[in-house]
Picture 1: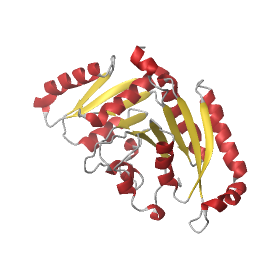
Picture 2: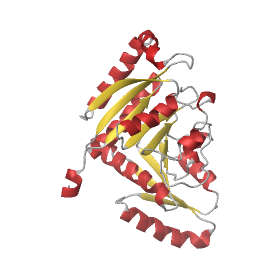
Picture 3: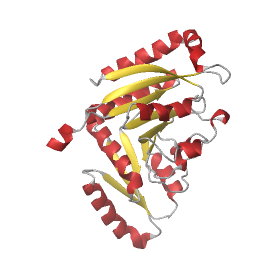
Length: 279
């Protein structure tokens, strides 16, 4: 490790917990990253207070779910500690759970947020949190959104076309391989067979520059990125898609994954095999 690396403060990985059923998957992902980056984990349980209830009176609301919250955070602490990483847990009272993830990340100078998405999570912005598109234009840090059931990093698919949108995807894949010995496949989609050689050279150079050695490369010539990812996902346990587009987080919570207009912030979308199921 270089002098520059040792002088940097330890990164903090924030895990936003909502559904106990997904706690272990999210903590596993965050702790593996924190372990490899020599960082720590901040696990938060966001307790959503009804709009008509002042936050000052939220303690009474918190008392009603204290047992559930303690159990959730205790499990998160235990799971994180198996990786030997420092972990802090806390409850966050909020009227708007999704917004609280952003404000907590800023308050604690977080380097990465790990959060889950499912149809039953209360971290979905929903009607009560309009303006999410505006909120995601100025992300406080990088985001990983884990969508789907189960955490399995044994076979990771990383689609890439180059550019900054897949930089973090490469880093996360590399960290997970170091932790779990994952097999990594890079996917690149081109328009026609005449572009195969150029695509092969691109993937070789791209992988080398990002220290992704001994990986498999896959070139699809159909020109249809979505179909290519969906087909390749069926042979993998996790798909990591990076994006600079401001609309990705918003779209994740409205059951879409296609990106929209560009923005400087980046956040990969990490999904265990969702595309193979046509979602």
